[in-house]
Image (cartoon, rainbow over all chains, first blue to last red; front, top):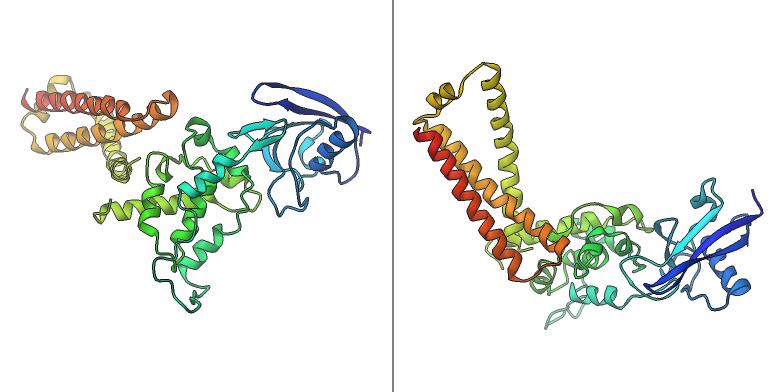
Length: 239
Length: 109
């Protein structure tokens, strides 16, 4: 193992440049460790975002050597190969606040736009709903439910890069979990929301979201489920 | 994309997957057999099966291709609203007219 790692870090906003740092190489070092070391030892003005450091909060996602990842759960060993160099950029498809910190507002607004929230309806049940774990709907919801909103899938998505209005994999995945929630009473409005020009049919099934999701969720399959649901509804004479 | 357009594109894709194989197979067979253009036209003249098959082929193409091009136009040019819809409706109409003109010509000549 060489003693020094050559790290290039994006500085600035959409306009900016890479700045190089030489960081001591350490065993089991994560990419987040490297970024934190730069900020604490070399340049206190470096902006980035993190919170839990253990892969629970989803706030430290960045593009590392060309691929979107959680930096807290990515060891340097896994990504550098034999090069001993790291290139760290902010997530793609997001507006850059500064350096490695991105603006997540549009990303989460799209969750609302996709009606990615539970709709109890005007007369919610008073008692607990019983949803047997073995039912198809429950299992389909389970497969997508662990999303923590880190934005890795959104950064990896080519369709978002082409059409900034596209709802994106995370919002559509959330909508799919709710389409499979048997208690929800807002399905018609949800299917309307996700079936416009910027909705599920715009997905090209490139599967980048599925490849890079750190939680091993497959938003591509969730989106495919939504496509089936809206086509089924349209063929039955729905809107 | 409208769910009906999405479904129409998928359904016509199924039809075209079959029709293109039949079309290419027929072309290869005709060429390998040494048929001339006159021989081919003699076989297609008044052939209702031929006219129906290629009529459906033309309809499937006129539905399938413009929907795909509409997506490309929206994504790559950033054009939104009615402009891509109108442009591609015109393209669909052109495909229909040219396609049926060709089918009619081969059927009647």
